[in-house]
Amino acid sequence: MDYLYFDIECCDGNTMCSFGYVIVDDKFNIKEKKDILINPERPFKIARAGFDPRNDLAYSEEEFLKQPNFKNRYTQIKNLLTKEDRIILGHCVNYDLKYLFKACKRYHKEKIPMKAYDTQCIYNKNNTVALSKIIKSLDVDVSNLTTHKSCDDAEMSMLYIKATCEKDNISIDELLKKNKGCEKFFKYFR
Image 1: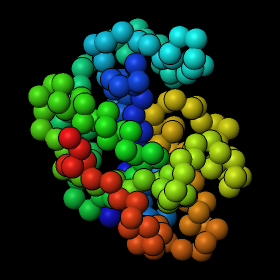
Image 2 (image 1 turned 60 degrees about the horizontal axis):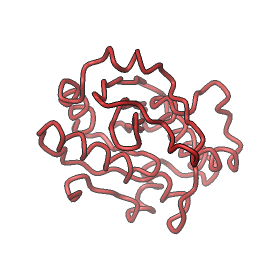
Image 3 (image 1 turned 180 degrees about the horizontal axis):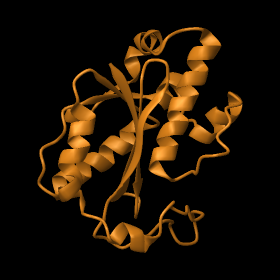
């Protein structure tokens, strides 16, 4: 059994440009960590003009544009998300599942039959809480990680869950059993 935490970044608020993940064992030892960069085949629009602050991505637009598109990354991502004996987690995972759904639809790929635990829901079932605020509230050191770098954001989610398990003196499996209502299912997205 292993645990894959993932995060997706978009070039325009809707179109995937990276799928980052970290795979850990039940003791939170990192087995694999990677950013899969994707050519979004769309212009980059990182903020709404005059409204949102710009979120800088971890890589240049040129670096993304040199990569294969989602159609060519689909099998790799699907295999990561559907491996037997793997539990999937992500922060505010409904958004990431929505981006994944849109990419599958755009490239005429089959939806990926999977479920993922929403780490935001584990922290607070009623309100959306930014990962940075959760990390700060638990005093988790992430000074060596970069926000908006998908694999680092995935690792931050993992570190928050690790800190929660240590604080409550429970295993990851016990934490997930207590939070069955935090499961999200990709197959039900329309």
